Length: 260
Image (cartoon, rainbow, N blue to C red; front, side, top):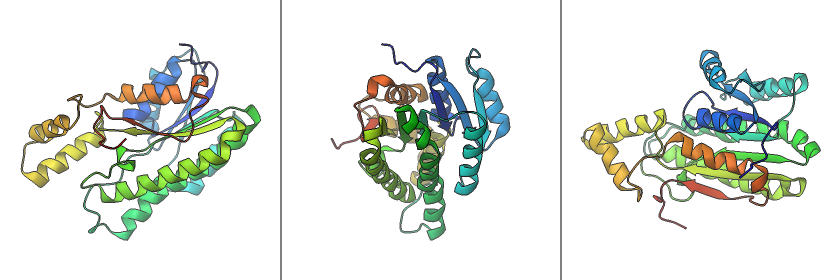
């Protein structure tokens, strides 16, 4: 299937590791010109060097704890270089823990890094998408959008807010050839998953291997996802082939989520 992504411009957030890194690679392999964005310049350079070199890929150094600085940096980049047809919003999840014991500051920090940053990026990038009559905004969230996950109180709360923001945006932008969709990863082999397994091990007294196996057994596929599998779903939603898919929540979780 020809995804018709050749020479499209994409901004991939959180692209130095895990799903973000795999997505940058998948898009680049389809001919997309990728701009990486994250806060660690050394890691950005490493990922950039591994992308197919027949395209002028690039990177932006930005910290998602400061939405206004993020907006300024991306806005300046667009003025000096080019706009983006594709925006992949992807940021590391909040720390785990029960919701009742969460500090207000934890909610505020997560809201800033996820919803506020998603919003300023969309506002900065959408004008170019409208000019091109082509736009794909894909938000990497979590299956907690459909089924809250135990021990991830702040994350469950913020992820739900992002999903509702996304659905509202999809309704507003569809008329301009722009789609807005959410990909909901399940347990995926990333640094984030390693952290969750360690927390479960400490909480239950089980070994990390036992905690990991219990999580795998909750999945019909009986394994964790590879980041590349989630990246493939994102890449399809970014393509011209997905033009009539808009406003959805797509779980990529091996069937773990119980709801429809």
